[in-house]
Length: 608
Image 1 (tube, rainbow, N blue to C red):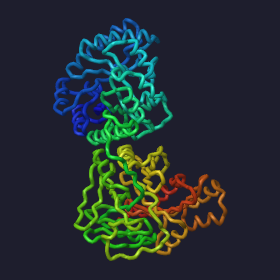
Image 2: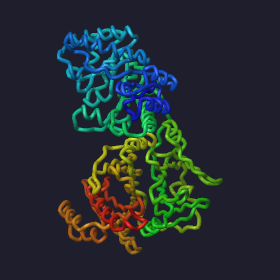
Image 3: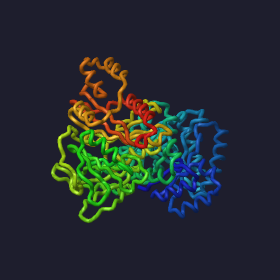
Image 4: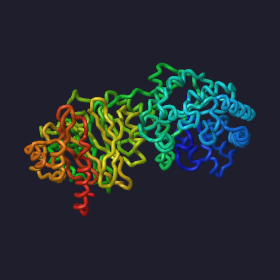
């Protein structure tokens, strides 16, 4: 199917929107009427620009409040429609979106609405234009696509069909299966949008919180399958009203949008089975584990001291690069000082273990993800990589050494032999994204790597609410919590969580080697006593090691944090039995403690 996007999805002028859509690879656009109204380019100039860019103008929208009205108002509406059709003829658009009446409908009669739409169809046909009638989720009398189709059946006009919008259908909980009862040739247009599961009025939900496919809670794959089975062969078009996208870089949002549509086609094609109407891309290869975490800075010596205190072992310096490897168990931390002038310590890369790195790389290319290029010398393992929306570099390792260390670790020399320090693996890597990049990052990890994205949670912190969403594989061997930094926080910290079987022992060992964990206030332990009725000796063990604690119906969670260096800090965690969370109730305590410590050490260059 052809791919289209509504100009309302993008920021900037109409000319900038068209240019970005073409550069991203879209076939066509829906022109949102206000975008044309405020443009100083004539319809003819916009048409010529679209032609030069190779874009078709698939829809002009919206035309509101037409049907279900009194006879005198109908005549006024037809005059209004005639002026729109004149503009469309100049623009080169042949389909107009007519929304079910919200503001002026006073006659609740399908036959009246059908008769009035028939007259509109006659007028539209005289201009070579088609009318796509859409049921708005908040329409006065027509708010269900099945109802709009019954009216269109009554209209019985070759120039009048339906427009199906996934948001208006799925937000109301309507079953999309009845799409298959509509003849494909009478589905004139399709608009697609995802959305988070929210409890709010549907109009506000629609106007501010739509998302691109793959970023919300709607089953858009099934929705497209129903379209294909109905025989629809027109454009799949994105219509996403979202406050974030209307403020972000136009080209980047267009690229993000196309990626979502490519992912959706692939998803639907896999559900439908062999078909010529939907495009498939390379198979997803969900990561089986974390290969390494890379921390980059001009000077990583402070991070090295902290890793040593936590029990990791220096495994050597890379034979051709200013890169050093530290490890314990299956946890590998790469410290990179290459091309890092003036950079403070930050999480710069994550390596994933996959079964087939070539297949995952092909999928990333199909989704137009930017590759990450790094110089590799002769005899060194070449890892496929690409760049996540935050700038994080993601690399894939499809070669293992039968459960032992990866082959690339052999490129590090003059280090020490690994020893058992209690740290077993990397439990999770907590990343931060700006508010404008978060939804794009969710799509990246789900579409490229096949990670799962449960609903986001919100955590109160000293600088405001922190939105957090965990990306993971099915068995939890890959966990990537992603935090949205509060507004104005440009250096929101990130951290690496190390997993062990006895966190108290690791904490004691770290103290003996000079580490001072993030201090936890006494009030926190009074709260634990009230919440969990812990024994005095248990509370004392927690307090003496600055350990935080959580418990659910499956198990327990004990953990501590280090102070941060630059934008990085570490967490050491112990999961008992089936505990699968992250101690979210303790997060405000950690955030407040970090803020206090930051104020105390602000003059030091190693902390912020």
